[in-house]
Image 1 (cartoon, helix red, strand yellow):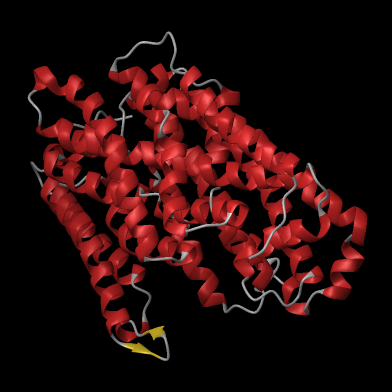
Image 2 (tube, helix red, strand yellow):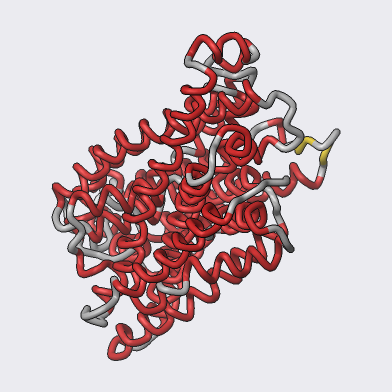
Length: 481
């Protein structure tokens, strides 16, 4: 895609990138260097910081959102909005306070407390896959290439390094400070492009007369089965490491719960802005050959200098906030949840911080390789969600509720079989393709058999757990709440 930037727009973008690195390093000054500080910012997140970092982290797929809203209109809100609000609400009401009250660090910590070390290690592997920010590495590289031109591979590497370099020193506190800055930038950028579109072309009447009728329906031409699949993928919210990390880092239980409730309101507003921008892109530019570039194309048509630079900053901020957070979470999974569990207790904290820093490099390299190997944002989301969610969902949720306890061996088996069955079904479907469409066994989406097997093993575990003398074993080391 060809775009044109004036010196002022390029200057603004470079100033933004410099500000990100400066804030990231500035946040790390005069702070403790222990694991509690590096991993969770000393558990000091206030409500404004909690909301800013959660909202910006959980909304990184901006080019994918632009493509979907360009193709399917308002259906974007029903696929990438409504299901996530619903599960975020459930998270706030059922999990947020419980998570903060544990005073733990990570999801595998809770799995070990509930079901033992083998389940925790397997959970750490799956959490690493889930948090791997490959989709956001790809989007960031593509967007930077749009701005500066050149080779995509080089920009993927350079942009990833720029987004994560300050985390080596400041850890989670640096991430929070930068996220808060990016939170403001993303809202400003999209508010600007919607305001310019409405001012130049008019409001709802213009959209009604220039959009295909299906773009203004809730399905957007998609089948209800297709939308239902994405609703199940939104279960990701309940096991997302970023949600759990921010609850662990909150100042108290009330902050964790209220923060998620306030965040839902901000996500609603931002979804309204992004979906509206996608609708205007389709109405004004109906023949785009690459809908993934709908937002940059719209900016090229309607935004003057300065506003264009600020809008690109908003898109960059949306992606970079998620990329930095997920890279840090992936690194913590390596340093604390895998290496830390193999270390002797006397050196555990020392090795946790050191290997978390090494993990930043490992996580970035893995993400770069995946982004270049699977150059599809939606494809990466779908693949990871479909394969990993069935393994993690039931054990994580059950670890917080006493009536759902089962013996550790069943918890491990439930996690392993849920993951393997969904992955095997996914692979089988892609080995036997027909007209470019995966042919899954019995025509069933891979997530469903994975979840069914995981639940079946869990049910057998519950039957075992309620036998006389087995109730205590089923709970592991969970403290009832």
